[in-house]
Image 1 (cartoon, rainbow, N blue to C red):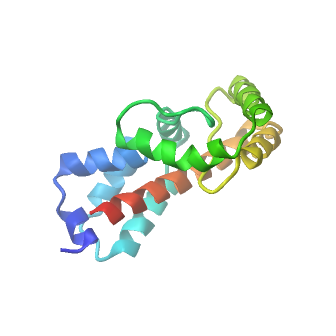
Image 2 (cartoon, rainbow, N blue to C red):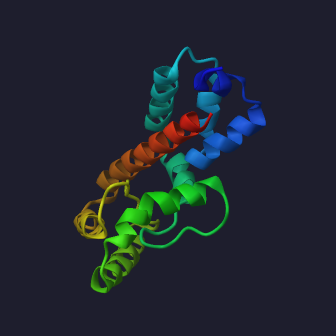
Length: 168
């Protein structure tokens, strides 16, 4: 059975758990689950992408609630925590103490300004790159930042959904 056939056949509860690990916004997962069966991988990915683009800000905030601060190690044994550790691992290894301290400060300033964690698609980025992005985004107004946060969350969810499909 192909990965998509397995995805289509997953019991609802197991599929929900897998999708919530990708993005902790139940509306996103419900939309994807409701679209089953999918003819192929591209259709699953396209449906997930469209569902992420349709999220309300409240859904995005739910998704943010499951993400640790950049530079902090995600705790727990959940799939989501494991993915977060992998996504941030390269950046964590590439940072010196001054960059790590500056990122902690940027996280604090960002949270003070916007009221939620700084979220960025960290895979493949150094902490210096992430720090530069955090500092740049501190200059955004709330409306502009919400667009960026939703886009970063969409990219993370897409990467994680690809991992789910690869594991099936």
